[in-house]
Length: 182
Image 1 (cartoon, helix red, strand yellow):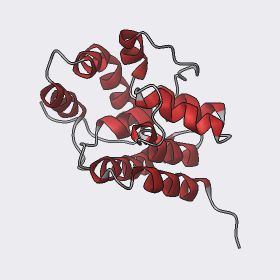
Image 2 (image 1 turned 90 degrees about the vertical axis):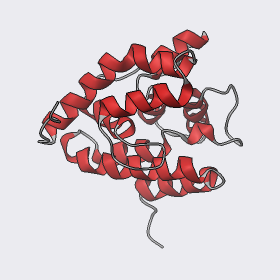
Image 3 (image 1 turned 120 degrees about the vertical axis):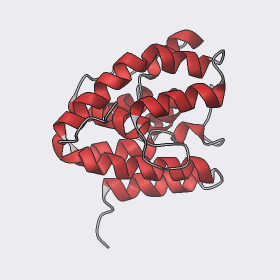
């Protein structure tokens, strides 16, 4: 039997642990599709898609430990022998450092400033909770509305918005997308 590809491993792991969370799984699968659109402009296209499949695995009840999904997912992957780079991408996805700080948590893995990181943030933040493609500013507004402006998630995304928008803009330029008409 041929060795399982990393992307296949990541998809199976996500599908296994998020099977009882169909909305979350739909989001993750769509983020992986978005990531595939940007993979060619990164230094490791396969890692981008793997990170996209696994970025929200920390939401799975059987994985959650501290209740902050980026760290829970990274710790789970670290304990399974995943690379520090993958753990860092999961732990820091979509500017998670802002919410971690607001929660009094420390992320053990550094956030890389790279085209791959930008592409992961773009893929996540241009995908709705149900898996549709959206524009970054619409997604930020959706988070605000869904959580309410007083919620830590909404406040964190609002604070992180300039960084998220910048990462999305860089990714869209790299892949040759035209900016949205305002």
